[in-house]
Image 1 (cartoon, chains in turn cyan, green):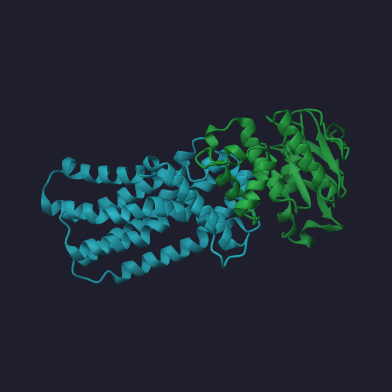
Image 2 (cartoon, each protein chain N blue to C red):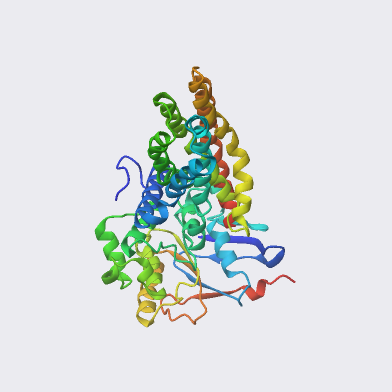
Length: 233
Length: 210
């Protein structure tokens, strides 16, 4: 598996591509582990009708919130181990010594996390939407809001994982750090579907989600790279 | 090649060494000696750029690191006592990843030659998790062959877990590197069996904080 022929060996793109390709390959060799967040997502969502009762109207109203909360928790489930394995076997040290900035590594790890965790959640969402009897436009809005929102969760999760790397009780700290940061995405993501159901345009919510995504995509990898350097020192 | 001036390091709040003036000449092999916990690994990581010295500075050909820019330190090679191989990859995949990461040649022929040199070629398709410690060490050290052009090798316990045959192979690679003008700084708990060049010994005990 060679990296993009256009990219110079050792450049940002080359390092990004080789870390991403390796993480996807590792996930494909541990498919069951990789699909755990998806299984959690589907199981948690399908427990709601059993727990709160099968009344169609109520289920339809709470579907966007339930899907978003479960997506958030499913993302957090796997993010704790994002850097832990590489930290333990020395791979992380070697990645930080690569002839480019650690930002490429941070971005590649988060991109791999999103492709393994976020993307399957988005693909599974139409299915669970139908389970809750959501209308077509509401479902499309939900999928679009998750497409914008799950990369934010992976980027923030990567930051939390890097900050808590090598600490004791890092899982608890990770949740305390990431969940408050992820709440805006949750509010605007689930809110977008609410506006569509109320007959309004979700434009405003999408703009805010997009802005959040851009801000996170610029800020989080910088902070993650710095945190990784500190944790390996 | 590399000089340090008054370098000091600590782990946590405990000072490990201070006033360290290390000179590494091209074509030399230097053995870093010291008791456990004396800071051998800390010093190697510091030189590699993974941690920052508490005092002192690094120079190369008379210029400090800052003047030289970050670029040239990235040509240095550091292999820690961890092998940086993923259990789920095969030996050649793991080596290829490390080579790609550091912008080294990744053609099949180059990887094959490197694995052959360290005598681990016949296990190249085996998943790393099925390899013994010594075999993993050989795969990690095969990177040396790919990174011959690097001016400085920093090796933390490279002989760890290697058998006699592996030690001979590694001695050969290190000797060739020094003969080509490269510079090697390594730690080892066993006496070095390297004969050419004769390793210089640098003892960290002389630099323990007073």
